[in-house]
Image (tube, rainbow over the protein chains, first blue to last red):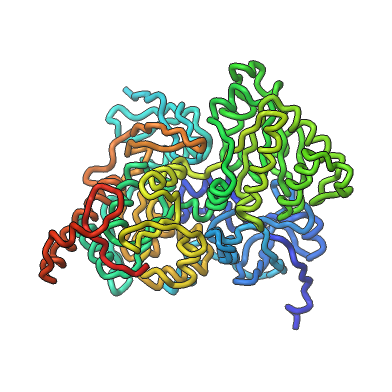
Length: 136
Length: 471
């Protein structure tokens, strides 16, 4: 009941490269740098206010095909209202739809998500997320 | 005394910068410093010798633990797994050399499997649009020396190709552009105010997913229908469209660089298709080229190597034995994975476990998963067999194709750790073993070798028959 009362709004997700992610992945996907670079959702400040999301707090991002807990931050590269961004990587790919429209390319950008505050939730590591998904 | 190596190629993005300077220790075993490369490229070189490498193949045991095995045992395992599979898929190649891509073609042809590369999830739609519409393009040297208008559409080079603006497009002093950026106009079309947009002269903040509409508006201007353009198209005011269209038309030499903003979003190949059509329109009054911002330093490589081998740049289906075919949506990795059509996945020179949507990873992981990668990537973590290889461009020399399809000979900086193999050597070793197994199978079935060699084969040099006919 409490969860259903939390504000929800559909945002458009894009998942792309950032230089922070690029440097971190070369250091290694098991490193803290990679975790810090990729387990964040960048949002518009007004969207965050509207959805009662505090900066650096965990949020649940849900798409048609999955959900993931990440940390919310105000976009380092400015985002317009209604757009949010998770840097490409393990966290983003938990929610990327596989549909390719017969091109081979999944819908990495431009798919609807809901973002809700998830106080107390833990942002899990890349290996943990992956191993659980493939049941290892 | 430390040794300085000049003119080294960077193994990161499609810029394939070949002016990197690397300083190695006097025993040539450690990379000490890297100059001229971007932050990401520098990290690749430094990480090569900064941590302990995995130097032996590791196979997963039934209890979940991994055990080190020799390269011969690994090659034998891969060959036997291929023998037992009906439809193997080898995917990746963004971070391998063309020599390895050629060796992979030999292996998959023997296996009767699918060959696919990272273009399948990035610039595949661009290649499809090139098939449909052609594309006027040029080399990055021409851009540097001549271009006066640079259009970045759905691309963020400051983050994804950090030296692109500095080395090729915006800031360099070119032969006809002696004042560098002072003589160039940079236009960025992106829904976000990216760092690239921050340094541009014009930023059209487009509504996400409405690229096709904005291209159409520009084409309307080209055809003299500007009076019919609505006040806003894709959240961009008509006035800005007209202003930018004037710059595009008046360019002496313009180049449109486009990125994932067109190919990852709705429209995909159609976005690139109309971008090319706009270039065609502009070429009636000006001079324009268009170029894809390729992601990996040699992702253009497999497109080239397999195009001259089979006629197709990606999603190459070799399961029919006597002919190759390609049909994105049918023979593309993600679609094959989701439909569970693959019963062996070989990940090479990329990290599919981190880069694919998790649903695709789940499907692929139902079957044997083999990873060929220098580092302990996510794909190596979940693999049944991880075979480490030398790092292409750092420890392995070879040909790479830059984003403008210019081939560059990369030299190695240091040697691989002793006993390790390059991608090419490993793939050849697997192919050799597979050929032996095929011959054994043929003998066991008491077939005459002459009959086998008379069967139709693909156009590459070897003549062993495919293992199966599942296509």
